[in-house]
Each structure stands twice: as C-alpha cells, then as structure tokens.
View 1: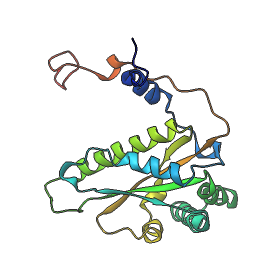
View 2: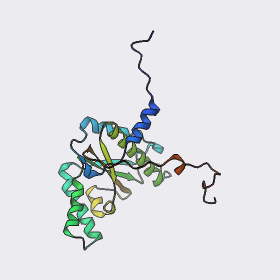
View 3: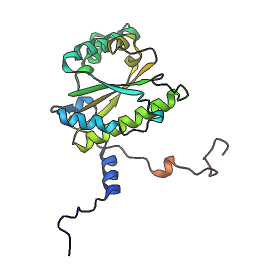
View 4: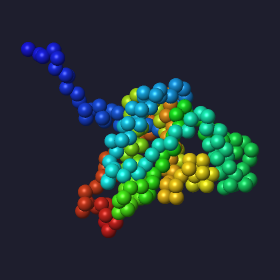
Length: 210
C-alpha cells in the first residue's frame, strides 16, 4: 500500500539539466516589466551564496542600480564613450546613455582582489568564485521565469564608473547583470557538444604538444 504522505521522488538530474539548458541570454533591450519582486530578488541573490568560495572570503558583491540612479549611470556610459571616441556622434552618445535604462533589475558584479586574510588566494580564484555566484543567480532567475543577460564593455574600466560605484583600489567591475520579463527573444544558440570541450590527458589535442 502506498503511503499517502510519502514525498514523491524528484528526478534532480533531469530537473537540473532542463534548468541549465533553458537558461539563455536575453539582451537587456528585450527585458521589460515586471521585474522580480522583493521576495524573488532575495531568492535570486540567495542562490549566489552557494558558489564555491575558497577560504570563505566572499570576494564578490552585487550592487543594484535602482531607477533613481539610472540617469547617473547613463551619464557615465556617455562620458566613457566620448573619452574613447571624441568624434562620437550625438546619436551614438545617446545610445550609450540609453543602455542604463534597460531591464527592470540591473546590478553590477564587483570582485575584490584583496578581501580577507588569505592573500595566497589569488585574483583568478576570486573571479572564478564570482562567476559561479553569477551562474547560480542566473539559474534561479530562469527558474522563476525571468530572462537575464550579462553585459560588459569598456565603460567598466572608466574612472567615472569606479567613482559612481565607490570601488576600492583592489576592486574590479566584472559585468552588469540584467533581469526582467522577456518581451521578445531570438532563437536559442546551438550549444557546444561535450567532445568540443572535453579531452582526457594523453589524448590527441589534450595538451599543447599534441
């Protein structure tokens, strides 16, 4: 006789595979309202905490850009373009500024190269941890039904952006995360196959000498 209170078994591998394969980049201009509500934002951010973190340094953080501060970020994007290209047209400058207003939820990912008391844990490990945190965050956003994108660009290196986000000397802006409701999407890209990126040591192509 079946126990009516027995929890049905969950096929975790299938669920995990479906979630990971469902996640795809949706450009910020294709992300609209509604964005995640407060409870959903907390669930998305909490997922990031499961990222591997050697030494428990928490070398990364997410900085939200609320609607009230988007204009300031837009000015930074515009100024960064003019700094790189003094001949940028007014339309090009306006397009750079407009990028700050896309997607209802926008965050900057920051990694700290010196946080904590473990200097032997180098920047590469810290960036790797940040990348895992971002992937967890994107997967949770996908599970909740939202689209997402990572965006970068030369403005991340600008002094104006560093000042706006009060970045310390050892901190680096890695990318922006945009999350919102998908308003339109392009066909999904073809995923690489396992043989495209997997080798065994000693196999042809597994090391530079073969």
